[in-house]
Amino acid sequence: MSFRKVVRQSKFRHVFGQPVKNDQCYEDIRVSRVTWDSTFCAVNPKFLAVIVEASGGGAFLVLPLSKTGRIDKAYPTVCGHTGPVLDIDWCPHNDEVIASGSEDCTVMVWQIPENGLTSPLTEPVVVLEGHTKRVGIITWHPTARNVLLSAGCDNVVLIWNVGTAEELYRLDSLHPDLIYNVSWNHNGSLFCSACKDKSVRIIDPRRGTLVAEREKAHEGARPMRAIFLADGKVFTTGFSRMSERQLALWDPGSLLLQKASSSSKPPGPSPLCFCIVTSRAP
Image (cartoon, rainbow, N blue to C red; front, side, top):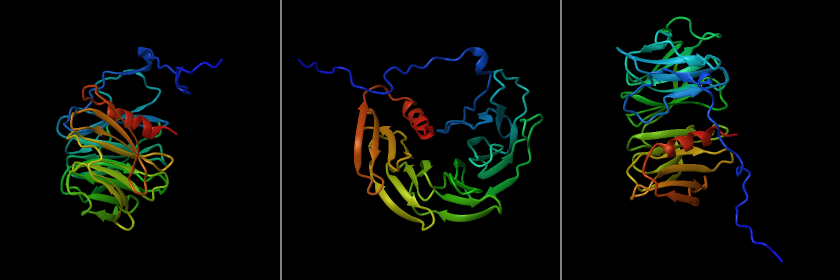
């Protein structure tokens, strides 16, 4: 006699999350309330960085991972921008280097002291000026040192040589509308982007050409996200016309749909959070 399996086998079946204790959390951080769709934080093996509220410009905290508990309101910040900070990203090759993009249309690169900040940091190592509108996306190249990508509300993607403060590539004709996010592939030869025109694109930055494009990847009007996975496939999150959450997996060569799922739960931030967690997975 054979018994039918009623429970789908999964290696995550018995995995449960448990909140850490309060003394292991970071408390009293005044996270920025600027109107921009961002994670407002970045982490590496040494530090946690969080974009915070600031008067007269933009700022973000840099905390050693061990400094948990209540954060003093007078704790020093990185505060060189003249407008609110919109995005930050740690350099994958140096745990003490972080880049920031701001409403002041600039990108700044900062050197954090080895043991963290003891006084406000106002002088960046490099200032990159090339955008005409606010810079909302910052991401380092995964394999090449000193190579940084920035994207702004001018619909332009710039790739910088941070060591010389020079533009390596300017991609100003591939996105007709606001860029929601950008994600490098595993070796940095390509990147994918999600745009307000509802298209997902795979771009070769060296040639400045489209490798593949998928129009109306998600037909809803709310923002969507696209990331490269470790196996080269493209994973997207978005919404349907009826505001149903959607997850989709695409073949990178042609951006043909491989798998899709949807949920009728009310719209919320979960697709963005899921996308971020997936992008960090090994």
